Length: 218
Ligand code: SAM
Image 1 (tube, rainbow, N blue to C red):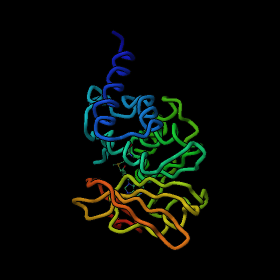
Image 2 (image 1 turned 90 degrees about the horizontal axis):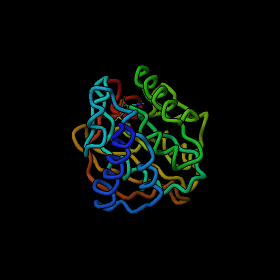
Image 3 (image 1 turned 30 degrees about the vertical axis):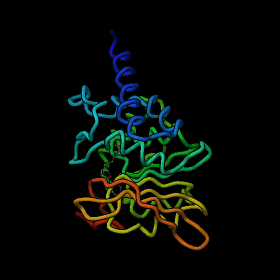
Image 4 (image 1 turned 180 degrees about the vertical axis):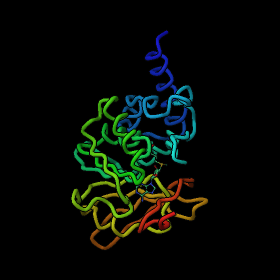
């Protein structure tokens, strides 16, 4: 059996066992996760674990998120394919690739230049070269590309970053893990006329969002 077939089989099993069986019911998200070749977004050394049920190291002390967490974030964003989306914390580029399957335009920002470069290459190899990969402090968003219909934050913030909320369009949705450095809840914030509407989802544990509206510099 070729590697391509193996990866396809592993990916289909991941979608059924780790996502659908755990309550992810958004068919667009399930299909997107069934299409993105996760093995292209992990370092060679851990490639055989690409479809396992967990986070994996990607270098620089950072991780590619667990598939279930990526799917949960995407499902909370409720995308229909027409949106411009901001992805904060590019990491491997995997979440940006899944978002590219679900939305019209994806901008992603990473603070570590080497990770952004590797992610840019992986996105191009996987066929997602239209994703706009930037280097910088994503806690401040990307004002020159705002407003966004949706923003996904893949690092833990102590509070809802004000700059990110302000870059949402009316009715826009922001998903962010909020809490301490050691544990958080995934929170959906909708920008409504009367002010932010919040809904807490699942408990989670992310690396910290550093930067001005995160946990600071280190
Ligand atoms: N979504 C990623 C993926 O699919 O591989 C996983 C992201 S990883 C859990 C979190 C990332 O957020 C790390 O790469 C980290 O360097 C980045 N990060 C932390 N603080 C940041 C900031 N202020 N701006 C941009 N990226 C940041």
